Amino acid sequence: MINLLPVPVLLAIFGAAVTLVVPRRPGVQRLVSVASLSGIVVVAGVFMWWTNVNGPMALWLGGWAAPLGIALVVDRLSALMLLVASVVALAVLIFATGQDKDEVRRETPVSIFHPTFLLLVAGVSNAFLAGDLFNLFVGFEILLFASYVLLTLGGTGDRVRAGTTYVIVSLLSSSLFLISISAIYAATGTVNMAHLSVRLRDLSEPVQLLLEVLLLVTFAIKAAVFPLSSWLPDSYPTAPAPVTAVFAGLLTKVGVYAIIRTETLLFPLHTLDTILLVAAGLTMVIGILGAIAQVEIKRMLSFTLISHIGYMIMGIALNTTAGLAATIFYTAHHITIQATLFLVTGLIERRGGTSSLDGLGGLLKTAPLLAFLFFVPAMNLGGIPPLSGFIGKLGLLEAAATVGTPLAWVVVTAGVATSLLTLMAMAKVWNRAFWGVTPTEQRRQAAIAANQDPEDVEEDDDPRVMPPLQVGATIGLIVFGLALTVFAGPLYEYATAAAESLRDGSIVAIVLPEGLR
Image (cartoon, rainbow, N blue to C red):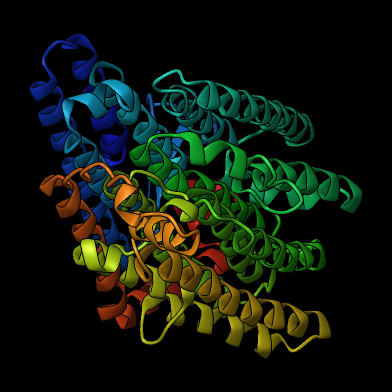
């Protein structure tokens, strides 16, 4: 079983290599890509079962003895993140294969898209399985390299401008990550995270604090935590719908995952809890205020993405098993729901010709299925009971209320307000895009009000039909999101067990021989 640890990364890299050498065979590319991601889903499911029954696994690559080699580690947390991420990636890939030829040429050129997409998945998988900081850095760089290409597909001016901002911010965070790794290695002589959990204790408190700040700032940029989140709303909305969906679902969550590892394994004393709680509250409130001010759906969802990162940071900062368990559950929920909403937005843009609320209306009448596809994940994001969004938020708010400090109650208030404002943002989209009248009817009404002949108003072009494969992929992801609700009990128990193992440091005993602990 241990020898399966590299398989998720190898499957994605092998699939990327195969699709790269057959650029003129789009059918082969699609088949290889779907097969590779399906294999990763199966392996991730096996990991989740095994770690829940038998505990974490570690594999030292290359035959090097600990702690010199490269360690791959899977525990309950990494197995869950890998499974959810691979399911979302598979759904997004199927959605992308449903595009027509014009969309493929304009949005996701197949010869480029498939190998780059698989390389992104390889980076995400490597980051979740990395047992040392440098391998985590490699995972980040692989996914960032792929994201640079995906973000600028089509080469439009907006995408190039957005890509420039994204690349600059990513290079800055990567440079800071390298500086952090260098400083940690200079202070401890190792970059293996399990070994660091032992050696960092011997450093003075000021040095520990400096190293913790370096890592948290690095990962906060990648996770889009306020005030390091302003790059995200200008970068994500310009990309093609499948790219935006996978970015929103996965990339920021890798940053959240890294923060969890930092605060539970490397620096379990949590000296920066107060700062993290303040950042969590500000991320929630400022992000959602930005969302309700938008009229473009993609930008609105980008701001809601930022705001809901605040919930996850709140759970980490509480420094309790309950808070950490709720964060793990909510992260799995948010990966799924946020990606689903961006896919639905892609369908809205295709059906209505735009994703701006100023150019939409009456979709409930003209596309009732699309209305249903939006309504379910929108209510889930808003935290309507009994959906998984409500369960995760309730767990986080209860954990904060149990801590009971004045600051914790302030953040609880911010969390409740953010949830209500999220519903307000989703209601705004529903009222303007789905209720009301179509743009043609709006222009006719305006013509009547201006004493003009409404018959002179031109009809809108016939809307494009939503491809069945894209609709099917979106429905599949909605069903997966609902499964998080149906199986919320067992999944929450799994998240609680994951949180307990993170806090008791049991992973160190799996990775390191007794003489190094």
